[in-house]
Amino acid sequence: MAEEETKLQREFETWKINTPLLYDLVVCHATEFPSLTVQWSPAPPQPYLDDWSFSVHRLLLGTYTDDVAIKNFLLVADAVLPTESVSQDRDCEITTLPMVEIIHRIPMDGEVNIALYMPQNPEIVAVKTIYPQVYLINISNLGEMGNTESFDHLTKSMLGGHDEEGYALSWSTLRPGYLLSAARDNNICIWDVSSVSKPEVLYAKNIYQGHRKVTKDASWHQKNENLFGSVGDDGLLLIWDLRTSIPEGYGKSENEVEVDQLMILIFLFKPLSMITFLIICFYFSFEPKRFFLSQLNSLSFNPYNDWIVATGAVDKTLPLFDMRKLPLPVHALRSHVGDVFKVEWDPNHASILASASADRRIMIWDLNRIGKEQPKYDTTSDEPDELLFTHAGHISMVYDMAWNTHKPWVIASVGEDSCIQIWQIAENIYHDNDFA
Image 1 (cartoon, rainbow, N blue to C red):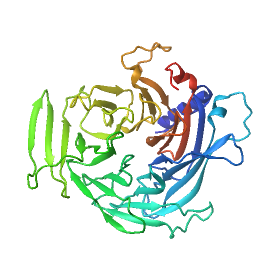
Image 2: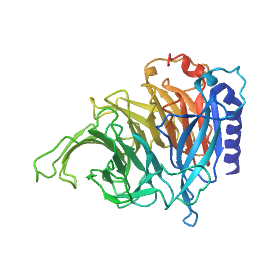
Image 3: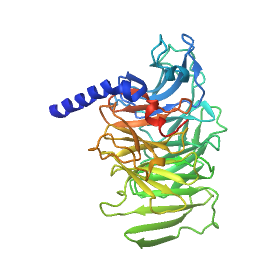
Image 4: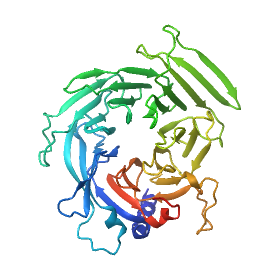
């Protein structure tokens, strides 16, 4: 154990020494407890009044105390970051330092598993804790920083439908108020909260049952308001289409075809509501050295491409799918040495994908480099050509990460090390790829 800690500390010191060469921006903020979740507010950043060359970006976090006797909080933070002009001018005199400041601590019942701003209205936040219900909180009346304990005046609704806790939430960017949730009860719930204006208990609009084991993640399609996907410990990648219906009472049909140890399951399910959905299920049961094992932790639809879906697997890979060429992955990214917990496409660049892992690393991939041999400055390196950058700032597993829509190439990440990190890779690293 002592030897491992010494090795980690040595790696971290090496990383700190190299940060001026690898990054245009690095901010590290230590917290009392880890956060399992991080998200940038979709609202535009505001000018920093003490220095107009900086702007204030809002973040959403949570606490994970791992102790029922310790109170947990939903955290609202401000990140003071340099504007793009300051970031690019390395010779200018900087009188203000980038920083992160927790400005509100909203008490929650249990550890915060995930929290997300509604994209159309950042004053509405959805929160999952260790309990089955999803909390819907209106944070518009938080007021000025100061009182961090009493928030009884906040509008807080509870969304029912799950029987167990979960870690997956997704707001639709195309259907305002539509919230998607997945949990350990294997179910997926959808609520329409567009009409919620006062505290109430709202039951799920639809409940979908397709996974055989824990549903790990669910996400809306970025370009089609009727599609969403889900993945789980059963190895199922489910693509759901809200427009599909079958006659009432048709029930469920199941067809299984085995092709080279691949089982394709096509289900016609009837959810608990009156609407029926077509689910295309892809169950992967490969031998070792195949594309991936039968557990998937995360998925993300490309915001620029109608067809491309990225997933993160427990076998340390990122299988990539083209929805026109299912069921096999069209490619798999390999470099992590731990479970891949999170995958997320860059909202500003169509070919850029980030992944967070139990191996303490966040990797940035450029899919345009697939099949294109890159110059190797280290001839002993076996890094794949698609790997653009590896962030090694965390000293323990990374729980979550988020791209900043308003500031390109900026990522916020959180992990077991109780550290919020905000970082932007150096321009010269991605400059050769002709990114804007």
